[in-house]
View 1 (cartoon, rainbow, N blue to C red):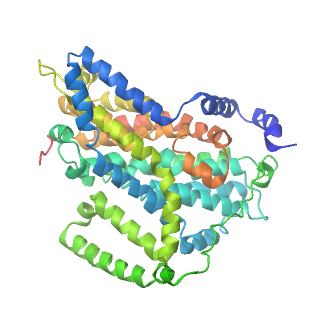
View 2 (view 1 turned 180 degrees about the horizontal axis):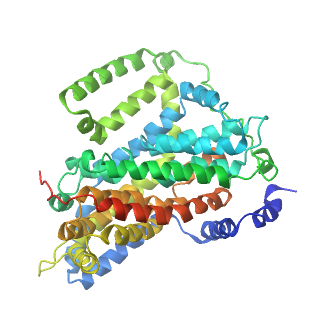
View 3 (view 1 turned 135 degrees about the vertical axis):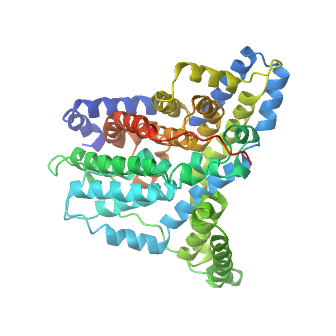
Amino acid sequence: MSFEAGAKPRAEGENLLARIALRFAAWSEHWFPDAFIFAAAAVVVVAVAALVNGASAAVVTKSFGDGFWSLIPFTMQQVMVVISGYVIASSPPVARLIDRIAALPRSGRGAVAFIAIVTMALSLINWALSLVFGGLLARAIAEREDLKMDYRAAGAAAYMGLGCTWALGVSSSAAQLQANAGAMPKALIEITGVIPFTQTIFLWQSMAMLAVLTVVSTLIAYWSAPSPSRAVTASMMGIDAATRTPPLRPRERPGEYLEYSPAITLLLAALAGGWLIQEFAAKNWILAISNLNTYNFGLLMLGLLLHWRPRSFLNATAKAVPATVGILIQFPLYGGVTAIMTAMTPEGHSLALRLAEFFSSINTRESFPVVMGLYSAALGFFIPSGGGKWVLEAPYVMQAANELKVHLGWAVQVYNAAEALPNLINPFFMLPLLGVLGVKARDIVGFTALQLAFHLPIVLFLLWALGLTLVYTPPVIP
């Protein structure tokens, strides 16, 4: 009997919430279109709304075309986040590190909790790195014969970085965008100004929320993992967990000499190291790391060093590129949507201003974090893109924050914390991890849905309570 044929009785033995989540995952996997369709639909809906708001067809179409390429710098930056994360995680030294730490857990449940902790920590640095590293760690532990780990629960734990904590660290697309004037659309700068990391992810309130969510997620991962008698292992699912990245093939031609020599790697790393030393010496380290170009540059050069030979680095890069397709295709659409939303009518009222007025009218300073958190989480299920969705929301959300005197950095963190919630049940960002694990979304989403049931009320409460401790300051326009 195959795993699929025997899975139903096991699912029925789980708690009610897990059964509902598994059925929902199967339904969404069957009926939900590609995320590109949601982005394209957003263009159509916003264009129609702008026309209803009084903008002419000429203004709407021109705004769409003008804005289509407005996010190209940020798009490429996010592509490099994915590539650098994959390159580092798949390097031989990191692969050996994974094998070593895979020997640390002493029980199946302990292994699941351990994977959750590791991936949440890594997600604060690079969300793509956390996905790939977490998936490879789950596979390495699944190889062990001395403990019986539920592979589905382990896969869900490997997703906790992106499903819980990534947007509260330097990997946050929204915080990175707000800290980099060169990457922001001009219309957004005029509303929010530049908001440094000290006012977003490095707020003590943000770090307190991160600590709470890390502890809660780890405990849920541990207690929701099935006992050894009920665990479904990788072998039971027909998965060979021993899969490894193939070694380099032998050099065949003289022209490949430099591809296999570390000389080029060392020279590039020396140049990069010299620049990074000067960059951090000239600036406060927080300001230096807030620059997404500096962040990506350092990670990419680290990946090159870890692979040692240029050919190994290039092979890893080639494998990482397919994971960037969604970013490359969707972000230009988000840029067009932003331009349409901020295009002025003859009366001087953009769609973004209308929405800002609406959210200001139904909110107070105290209710803003909860209402906007719920709104952002709901929208995130249909537009699964942290940076792209922020560009859509920011013009009217941040305008409302200004009018209600909500701390602008905390408004960004409201988005960050809430935006991660739909990731727990949306298959879009699971795709890179699922590819590493060799499973389907429905295999792990029951466990991630259980996390969502706990996260939603906790996140909303923390956004409200911690937001009360912050004082509004006007935006700084460069």
